[in-house]
Length: 242
Image (cartoon, rainbow, N blue to C red; front, side, top):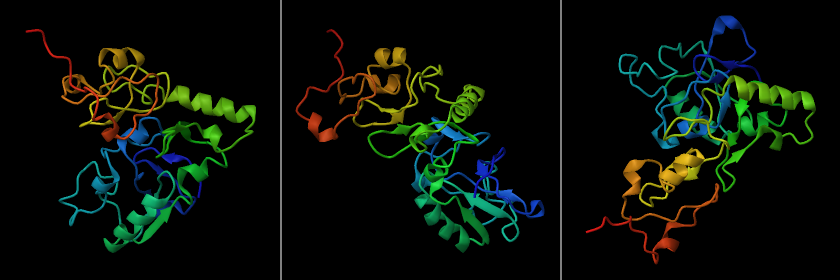
C-alpha cells in the first residue's frame, strides 16, 4: 500500500474510497522522526514505543487533542499504520482492534520495505535499531537512477527547516545520525552539531556535563561500548578548583 503522506497526522494515504476517510499514526518515536519521515508527517510526542497511547483513551472526552486518532470514526475510517519494519504496527493493531477500531491496515514490511521500491514522499534517512543508526533511502534501492537521487535531494531541501536539527542549539546537523549522551546515567540518543559536541563534551545538554559518570568524548559518530566497560575509568566530571 503506497501513497503520499497525509499532512495532518503522519499517515500514508490509502488508495480507497474518499468517503471512508483516512487516519492513523506513525508508530515510532520523536528521535526517529528527527532524521527522516514522510513529507507532512507530524512529529510524535513519544520517546519510546512502550509509551505510545494513540487511541487508548476510554472516551473521546479523555482523549488528548494531539492524538491522531482523536475523533476518528472507529467503524468507517480506514487507518494505515507504519513503522520501520512493520513489527510495532502488527503489535499495536491488535490493541486498537480491541478498542473498537475496525479498518486497520499496516504498511507491509514497514518503511524499510517501502524504500526498496522508491523513496517518493520520504525525506531524510531511516533510523535503524543497530550500530548503523541511520541509513539513506539509496541503501534499500541500490542502483537507483539519477532521477531518483534528484527527487530525494529535492525532498530533503524542502524539509530542511524540520529535519536534522541539533538538540542543543537548533542548527542543522551535517550528518543525519544520532549519538549517545556521554553521561552514562542519561545515555540519550540525540542529534548534535560539531560545535555543541565539543562545548558539551559529548553530552546532550548542560545538565549532563556535571554528571558524576561521564564517558570519554567519542570522535565523529562512533558508538559507546556497554556501560560496564567504563567502570574502571575515572569518569567523574572535572572538579572545581578549591
